Amino acid sequence: MKKRYFFYLFLLAIIGIILYAFFIEPKRIVTHNYTVGNNDGQKPVKVIQISDIHIQEKYPAAQLEKIVTKVNNEKPDIILFTGDLFDNYALYGPAEEVTQALSRLSAPLGKYAVWGNHDYGGAAAHVYPEILEAADFQLLENSGTNVSLPNGKSLYIAGLDDSLLGNSSVNDALADRQSEYTILLSHEPDKADSALDQNVQLILSGHSHGGQVKLPFLTIKNVMAEKYFEGFYNLANDTTLYVNTGLGTTKIPARFRVPPEIAVFDIYV
Image 1 (cartoon, rainbow, N blue to C red):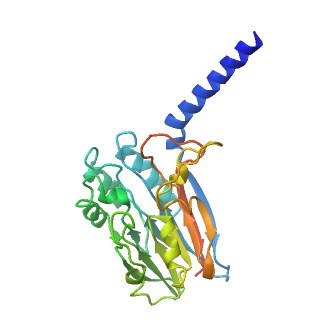
Image 2: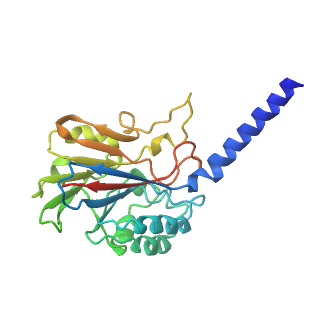
Image 3: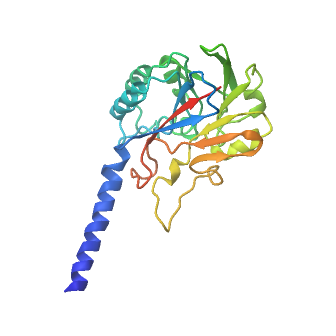
């Protein structure tokens, strides 16, 4: 009798975990707040990173409304998107609805984005730049921009082309730099090693989904997200890498112990 009881208890637990992973956690967006740099008494720049939205039938464009509300409630100065807007645009791609939602994201110092591998795949390559432009995002493709700050300083935001399906170049991305502080956007985190001698203070990446499903006996890692996987890494030459675990899902519409994330950085430049 006891064995049967524990078997049913175990079965219920497994069913509960599966239901949670497929229907609850994928929509449980968490906001992580971080401080970067030394507090010098001046007001920091508030930068929000979102990544890997992967719009699809299981994560429709309507879900963007929740993301937009959460991001705007933080009142960011700058919004950065590190790629993978659609999961497979050819199968599901309501471009107008997505554009309207992204247009409602508000950041007085600008909204910037880079290519992800899914932005090239699934027939998305021809619409991704158009959607971003219509939503007032600047697409950084091995390029960058110097952003003037209210305190009289400036920071340089650089973005790499996708390192899997594009042609990324750190040197090209940093060519126009005229600021002492640099944020480099790279969809794939393992590309960070190529920027460690370039005086880059902060690298922001995505792509890994943090494994998406985290089990004690299983770790799922994507290509070019094998060395750097989740969260902060202190690298050489005072370079910090942050790997965002993303907002959407891919391959399977489930998350377990890796909730969707919005990352908020108070950066002292």
